[in-house]
Structure formats: structure tokens, C-alpha cells
Length: 326
Image (cartoon, rainbow, N blue to C red; front, top):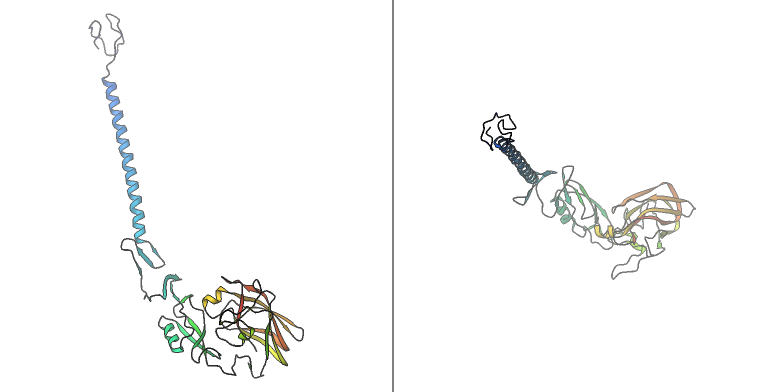
């Protein structure tokens, strides 16, 4: 190493000049070399980190996009590129089959066939894969061989192949297995039906207790504020009758809308002329149901008091479409 002051050559490891004693300055060459190497490795590390970040972003975006294209739920494949929907191995019937499935079975929306001729009603149901069970009943307002009511009611979903019960009018006959005048071989006869309250008529529609005699599109509706708990209907006879139970169609069963818009009976207390009381639960169903007593009761009247109700979607008014003691 040369002394910058006197020019004397000195050993590389000496700190002071051997001739003049001047402090020797080490070369910056090695230091500059080390600094250059450090900066080079720093850039390599930064580039690697940048590449890893870009790769992660690309993978995430591709994975999410690919998943959105190929997602399959309940056998329904939705392709976001073509904006089409396919249902595999099924036949699409417009307006009657929904995209929803229940345990792999397609759901069919039940059509409204009330008021149709029996043949037209059957065709409407069988054409979309439903079966029919025909039951006949007398009606004072619906012509013979036309549908009075149905169960389940229209607008609900059911499985393909399920059976829809159709109650078909056989005309306004005086005698019927479910009429009020004579309901069985014992010629049970209740000459009077009264109610504690009745909803006021609306136009051509009335809601009196007499509507309970016929299985058609009418109903009795209580007329007090609230859902009618404590209101009652009384069937009276001039003679002693032997009663084993009642047949009842709950709610305003003219249609799905009228049934669920109004309240329905949930629990009834039956009172008889011998002083006995019977309490029965009533199903929330717009079809004919049978409510049997534990024993036959001899009575001149049946007083049916509402103890509890199913709430209507729109109205508090509690309705019953049909009642027939047997």
C-alpha cells in the first residue's frame, strides 16, 4: 500500500507509513464490491416476493371464476357465461314445475281446478303428472259434475305422481251421505243451526251459519273483534239424536288464498244436552276431516265453542266451510 504523503510502499496490513508515520487509508475497492453484492441479493429477493404475490393473485382469481362456472347445486347447473339454466334428465312443463327440488324430486305447482267440469279438471292434473281421487257430494250452488273444492288447495307445491282429491257436485239432492238433513241410517236431523255471531255480508256474499249445511264455496264466519275465541255454533233438534262425531271442512276452503288469508279453528269444545263436554283438536287442513267422539252421545243439541285458532295471513276472521254430525 503506497503512502499518499511520501510515496513509500508499505505492506498491505500496515496502518501507518514506515517512513513518515502518516496514517494509511485502506482501499474502498473491497468495500464497494461487498456493497454491490448485497444490493444484488436484495433485488433478487424483492423480485421473488413480487412473483409470488402475482402468482397468488392469478391463482385466486382463476379458482373463483372456475368454481362459479362449474358449481352444481341439487342437480341444477348454472353457467354464468351462456346465462342458461339446465335441469338434467327432466321434462320442463311451463308454469307448473319449479326449479326447486325436494330430495331429488321435482315439485309441481298444483293448479286451481275448482269450478271446472270434472273431465277438464282431471285433464289439467294428469297432463302435469298428478293423479285424481274423485269424491261426490251434494251442492246447492255448483252444477252437477263440476268441481266444488280440491285438496290440497291450488298454489302449493307437491311431488309428481301425488294424488289430488276432487270434491265433485252431484247436484242439489235432498239426501246425501254427508248432508245435514239425513246423514246416516238413523235419520239424524238437526232442524236449526245458529251462531253466536256472524260476519256482515259483503255484496253477494253472506257468512251465516246455514252455509255450514253444504260442501260448496261458502262458509260461516264469526263476527266479533279478534279471532273469535269463545264464539260458538249450535245445532238443535226437536228429537233426541245419537251422535258419534262430526265431519268438518276447516277454514274458508274456496281457494288457497281464501283459506290462508282467514283464520281457522284449531280447538273446539263440544257441549251436549246431557251436560257432557268433549274437547277436540282440528287439523289445519282445507279438506274433509272426521272428528270422532270416544262414545256415542244422545243429545238434542250440539254446541261447538271455539277455544283456539290458526292465525290468518291477512284477517282475524275465523271461518268454517262445512260441518256434518254423524
